[in-house]
Each structure stands twice: as structure tokens, then as C-alpha cells.
Image (cartoon, rainbow, N blue to C red):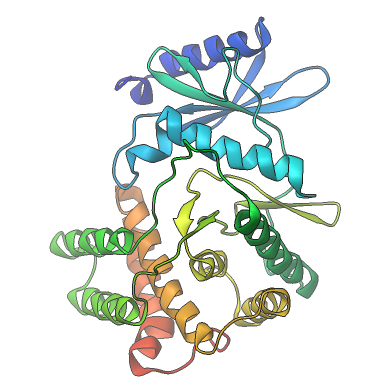
Length: 322
């Protein structure tokens, strides 16, 4: 399937064939986005669906994200969340041959029921931030009590991810995109964060990508979407990932809401800051593969070094202050 990514006509043909396999007829397709997963909205007279055509895995993605067994596992958790909680999530639709993954040639495809809602633009209200904290609690409590099926296979989100991101930042510096002084701050801040975050002995199933574009608001309800990166990590990593693009006062509301229902330990605020260092640098590594992002990365790293990373290196609290 190597050429599907580069050929929109062939990609659409794969999507049309997959949708026909589910519905036994042609369905109107609206392309939504391309990347390691190509997405389409399917409009039927009485319902909408999201069709995902999964491309071959390539760095910074691990094969387990997009293999049939990895996709089946993602869908298994989503199906359990839909059945066992009050959350509105992308509910997977069983594939024609059973399971949740349909192979259209070499391309694994999955189908989800459409989740209505809007991505939040601008600052969050205190109520929206509170809902976000409650959402994280609901996801964590379900994961904590859920027993995955025996063949459940999702990646481990260990510190290797941020080490790879630092290597990518080093590549940006060697090509002149990133000033050496900013690379030095990034490298030092990550080294300190990992020193403060030893690899945990216990891992839990987390969303791992609950940034501001991966939850929707609809009629006062918050709805998580895009579980493609879900895997084995820590609760604090999940919480930190969700705080990346927030203002300090919004972070405080999210964290205090979460802690009121799932108490944090002494030192967890500092550990959250260390995880946020990891999350921010991983974001740069993720986007560095596309040269059109390099200008944004250069500006953003300069800002983050001044506002967060140097404070972290100095041991100054910054999660709720900057």
C-alpha cells in the first residue's frame, strides 16, 4: 500500500470499496484529513460515520498503532467505553467479517459512529476546564477497572518517545532550523525531567493524546475523540498531555478537579511539570517530520524555553504561573 498515500484517486477507491463492504452500496464520502490515518465522513440518510483508512506505520509512529491487532485493541476499549460509561465516544462498528478491522487489500480500515460536537477555540471557561478534569477521571476510572481481552495489543508509551524527539530536535539544529542554544535548553530540560521521572513499575491504559483538538463540546457535554495513540502509560502523563495548550488558570482548574476525585500524591505537581516537558518536546518531534512545520517549531521552542524549560531547570514552579 506504499503508493496509496501519494495517490488521492487510489486512496479514495480504497475508501469507497471499504464503505461498500460495510454498507453493501455506494456511500457519499467527504475527505477530512490525511496522514498515517486517512479519514472520511460517510453521510447516510439517517446517520453519519467516520471511516479510517490506515497507512503503513512510519516514524514517529510504531507499527502497533496501525496493525490489525493494534486497531482491534483500540476499538475494543472504545466499545467498552461506549457500553460501560456515560461518555460519548467514537463507537466502532463491527466489520463485515467480524471484529472491527476490515482489510481492503493491504489497507486496514475501521468504521466509527460519528461524534457530533465542536473543537473549542480560544480560552476555556472554568466550567469547560472542570469538564475536562472530570473527563480524565472518567477515562482513568474505567481503564482501572476494565480487563482487556487476552489479545489486547497497544504500545508502551515509555521515555523512548521523548528521547527520539530530542534526536529529531538535534537534526533540526544540525540543519539550522533550531538555534544551538535552544537545543541545549531542550536537551537539559528533558534530561532533568527523565531523572525526576523514573520508568514506572505499573502502567495503565491511557488516551495519551487528549489535547485540545481531541475532545469536542456538544450541548454542555465534553466528548473525547481520536484514541489512535492510546496505550500503556501513567495517569500523570495523560493529565500532562491534556494541559499543553492551556493558560495557567485553566490548568489549575483541570488539575484541582481531577485531584478532588483522584487525589494526587506529594510531589505530583512537580512530576506533572516534568511530564509536560516530555509532552512538549514529543510534540516538536512529531511535527518535525514535515518541513512546513519548521518555522512554527523554531518560534514555539524559543517561547517555551523562555517561559517553561528554563524555569524547570531552575527548579521554579511554573505549571500554574506561566
